[in-house]
Length: 336
Ligand SMILES: Cc1cc2nc3c(=O)[nH]c(=O)nc-3n(C[C@H](O)[C@H](O)[C@H](O)COP(=O)(O)OP(=O)(O)OC[C@H]3O[C@@H](n4cnc5c(N)ncnc54)[C@H](O)[C@@H]3O)c2cc1C
Image (cartoon, rainbow, N blue to C red):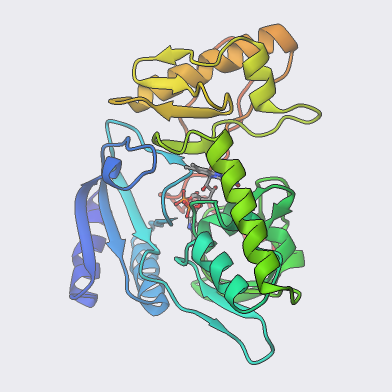
């Protein structure tokens, strides 16, 4: 704690003009509209400042957690007084490289990236135009929809690796992309700064029409009028989480202000005033009932913070899809 306070003072001195929100309630930032305060939320204006913050935190044996649009995270009501977040909100560089590939910084939204590709007659990012996250969050999660995934379109990723305090550029083959997973989830300390996307040429009108069609499908099927963090559970092998939850009769099932969406059983929505405890409890009940009925273990797709939070239930052991990012003392070497 003392280390964190010292690091914050040093960061303020080193980057005096930077926005640094202290004890910031995450309900203001998360798409779920849930979450108490984190100790600090820094909004650096460029990638060099991200590296400088990481460097100072590392000197104090700490690591930050990078966030994009917070559309896949559930922050706890009681807050995280030891967490230092870095938002990529201001990392917005987006341009065409001389060889026709797209360069995008981590904070660029996936919808903006998809529109930029369309405007330049480049196809393949249509699937991403309705995903409300950023390039950084999308790459870490290998976000996908309607048959497309980030792994299909990215060529290389630049990241700052905290343990070595070094910038790396790695080709997509080293990113270990898999269903909603990447190398950036396997260890703490990856700060994705930018990426290059290589796409085939396409017809602008056809690309725009495809984007419109997919976004209409999304509006028809998903509860976009209510706060959520997207699909609550990953797709279990051989099944669809939403279909299992629906068949278990759980559409509309609620705990406090959290509810299994009546429109799409794969979504947990905040009907108003939901707490993180409501969401945890609801997800736990859904897992238990689905397991009892179908012997299928649902794994959360939403990142449940704090990372060591355990869902205490009688179902199968749960593996949280997040690694701790505040204590670097036991960190192992980079795998890439
Ligand atoms: C209505 C709705 C619909 C959705 N639909 C889809 C969908 O169709 N497909 C899909 O895959 N997802 C979907 N999602 C979930 C979410 O939008 C995606 O997972 C998205 O990629 C998350 O991006 P983000 O910027 O919001 O990341 P955040 O939620 O901010 O962060 C997610 C994770 O990535 C990490 N992270 C973020 N930025 C960086 C960075 N620069 N460097 C290192 N780590 C970083 C964070 O630490 C966190 O662990 C949906 C969510 C909502 C609310």
